[in-house]
Length: 470
Ligand SMILES: Cc1cc2nc3c(=O)[nH]c(=O)nc-3n(C[C@H](O)[C@H](O)[C@H](O)COP(=O)(O)O)c2cc1C
Image (cartoon, rainbow, N blue to C red; front, side):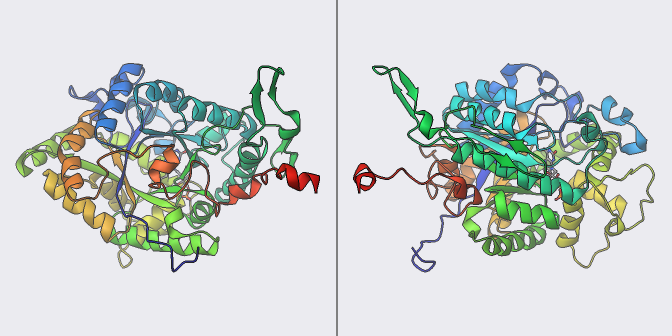
């Protein structure tokens, strides 16, 4: 097939619920409210109920963020983060996957795991196991970590340099592709009870990886799962982060500050994809957005005031300091953020610049911009804004951030989703198949597409018997 005879992909908006196995994720301070179940994060029941709500709203996925360290940048210690439960305590998101898979039929379940956190050999097995238990509905958000404390917990001494973390990530993924795609041939498992042969030893291969960071012999411990490689998400937006996304990711998570910023980011990613021999439709771009909606605009504004009243400034400063890798308790609020050289999230600073190229962003604006970026209004008004992000901004999906849970998701499912469905923007029904097939509307099979670098690690199909004889 050539470029000219391929039909353009159907442009629907995908919906992910953005959450974390914590008390307080993005919008700080709301955990103190009566009408949220955030404090119950340690129990399975609220998660199971949330998954049911999302599936009722035909969400594509529930997406779990994760960190493996405390936010200790603000004022140079972790006190503010601990006091305000800022992503701390934080439980393992992957442990929720089987429970959510059991109570849903279609919902994708994507979780974050840092490449600093676990050796790729053991992670490969963990992901394959979860892909089996979900019948191929699992996604993995590949992150490289930005918290010093995380790296010190994991034996690195300090946070490896920003670009070096991505180099390590490249090799981490190479090991995984070899294990997931290349170690077991498709017909290695014969499960022949008569002959007492479960798997054919000639079709299970070592990978023999010897690299700069990892040496792995193999073979992979798990037999091939429905997707083999889980759907690959990524969330870095720096120069190096975008290269990483264009090479490896099937979905990327951006945090543009407005539609213009999204368009610039999306166009940039599309150009990079082409340079990597992939196509724009091979990478879905999800924008993080917070929505406050109600049946009237007045009620939505009242709800927003309630959010504002509960907002914790200290918690917000703690989380944003961690993202920026800069102590907002010590910097001059008037100083331009563009001058910051950080080893944390470079992409966040770039996303500010792209959203207002002629504006000098100051530290005080960053916090305000992050704390106040919300879409507030009736279902119709919210749908209008989402449509603008989708059509003008070029995004493929939204990662919906909550203020209360499950309230924010319920409001969206009951109010906004039917409007978006009537406009033909979001799906009314799920398609059959794995998470990858659903997410790409069948444009992809259950496994990585042929243009993806992971596909190069597949073993060629065994020759037919006649060819062997010849
Ligand atoms: C919207 C968004 C969500 C992210 N979620 C996580 C996460 O859950 N865990 C994590 O360790 N890093 C997360 N990150 C951080 C990135 O994975 C990355 O490490 C960071 O942005 C630094 O890379 P960059 O400079 O390329 O942007 C997120 C970043 C963004 C922008």
